Image (cartoon, rainbow, N blue to C red; front, side, top):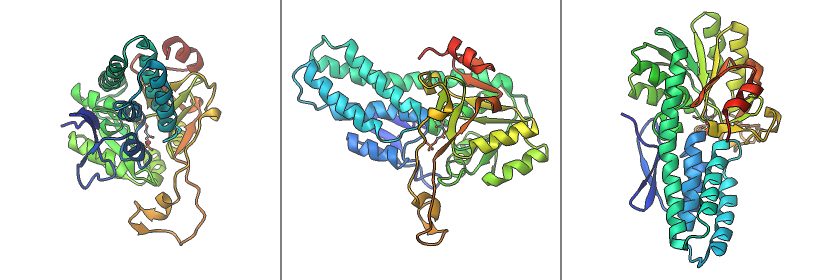
Length: 347
Ligand code: MRU
C-alpha cells in the first residue's frame, strides 16, 4: 500500500509529486540538482526526513558528471552544491543532516580515485533511504506503546509515509498501533495554508485503512473540550537541545490546547531532527513562505483582497514544557528533556 516518496531508479531520482495529491498519484523523474531544489522549494517533496534524503540526492545529481580529476577539485564542487541545496529550505534539521552525511562520505573516501569517491557518495545517499525506513519503524514500535485501542488521536500537517521514505513518524506510530491490532481514530487538522493535513494525511491514512476524520484547524479546541481527543501526535522539523520543537505552523496552538485540556502531546521524530548545537527553540530558523500560499486556495482561487499584506511563517516552535514525550528510534524521551536528550541523542 505504501509508496516510496523518493527512490533512485535507472539514473534518475523519482519522487511523488505531493502537490498533485490527493487528486492524482504522480511520479516525477528528476535528473538535475536545480530541478530537485525547485521540487524541494515548491514542496513537491517535503517533510523533514524526506528532505534529508532529497538533499543528499540533489548533491549527487550535481556531482555525478563532474569532470574533477582529483579529490581537491571534487571537494570544491561538492561544497558549492551543498551550499546551493542548503539554501532551499531552512527549518528542517534533517536537510542539513543529509548534506553532512554526504560531506562525511567524501571525507572518508578522500584517498580513493574520483570514480570511487563518486560511487561512495551515491551509496551514502542510497543508505539514507534504508536508514529512514528502519528508523521510522523503530519510532512506530516505541510509540505504539503509548496508544490504547480506542484512542482518538489528533495530528497536524503530514508526518507520515509521504514526509519520510515510506512509513512515517507521527503516522508511523499510528500504523504500528494498527499492526498491533489496536483500533484508533484519527482527526487530521487540515493545516492551512498548504493543506498537508487535508491533501496528504487524509489521503494517506485512508489508503492505509485508518479511520480518519478531517477537521479545520480551528476545530481542535472544540473537540478537546468535548473530550473527543485522547492524544496528540505530531512530527518535528527541528528539536533544540532543551526539547523545544519546531513543526508546522499551528502545532504550537494545538500544544497549548492540549496542556489546557490535559491531553498528552507527543512529538515523534528521528535523531536526525535534533539540533544539539542550539540550546533552545529561539535559535531555530523559521521559514517564511510566499504570500500566494495564503491569499489563494492552493494557488487556484483568490480568497483575500488583491494586494493585502500577508505574514506566512511555515513553522512555529512548541516550548518543551508543553510536550509530554518525544518518541525517537532510540526510545521514548520524557522530561527533563535537556538531560534525557543529551543522554540518548548523539548526532
Ligand atoms: O512544510 P512541510 O510540509 O515540509 O512541513 C512538514 C512538517 O511540518 C512535518 O510535520 C515535519 O516535517 C515532520 S515529517 C515526519
